[in-house]
Image 1: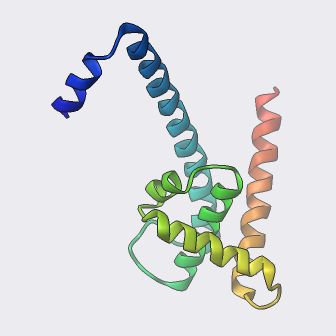
Image 2: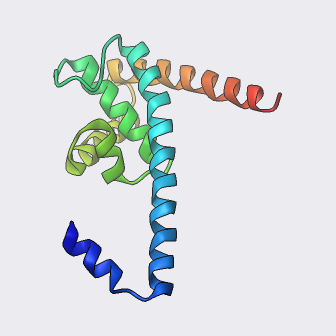
Length: 137
């Protein structure tokens, strides 16, 4: 870490100011994904009836992780950041997203996945509608 600090201090003042701005912006982005993840985490845990961050591999927890990974990806968050939130490698997140895409590509094949997805999206829509109306008050 001290090597990184030394290299940063060798930058010109203009470059250091730019770096500060970039780092500040990255902190805002991180806060955003953490806030959104907390919302999705609460909803999916309610839907599946367990903690998706536990190391257990029960099917309902695996499905919950897939749903959250897919939703965050659909909202435009980077795979690596999704992985950090879930405590998974980015390749695992790519696999989760791919599995959820199969659910939509082959309707009626993954019944349990579809049931959880429907419950999750219903609760998420209710939450988003409620939070928008309370923000406007």
